[in-house]
Image 1 (cartoon, rainbow, N blue to C red):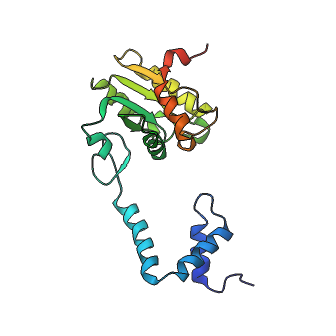
Image 2: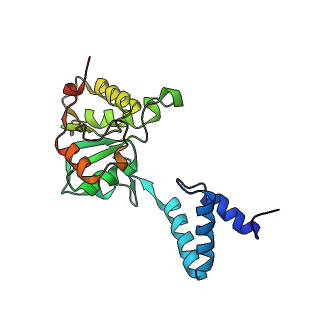
Image 3: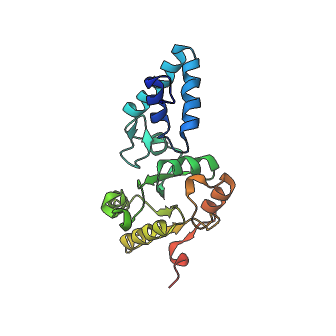
Length: 206
């Protein structure tokens, strides 16, 4: 027997349950909540998602999400464009911005090197980072990737790729626990990790 009284509800539940952390029970509650709202509210909700998906672009300089070709951070004269913080995902930019401790700009890689998943340097925005540093306008690159094996591998690859160029390479302090993702670190710890960053050379252990 079908547990759903409507195929339309079942389809909505199936789609909602594809969201991170949303099981079928939660998806059903969300679907029924949307169904109980006035039609205009549900249409506004759906329209916002469609507009976001179709309208979002990626900044041509840092690859953060944006409404315009150049994101507000890269285009702001108040930001220090000579300091570039390298992060894994867009969510990491939001997390660091929430600390209020960083006034430079960003470079979003779109992931980390993971041979087991078939992800190499050319699958990420690493070549674009190298070109950005070679342009001569960057004085410091801050590596703010997750403290995982893949994050450390990516850090080291970038370190080797930028060696010989006139740029300071630093890494955030290990206030962020080993294995943690930047996006989910608390704001105080993350802010202190940015402020107390060290030269990458000093973080290497041979």
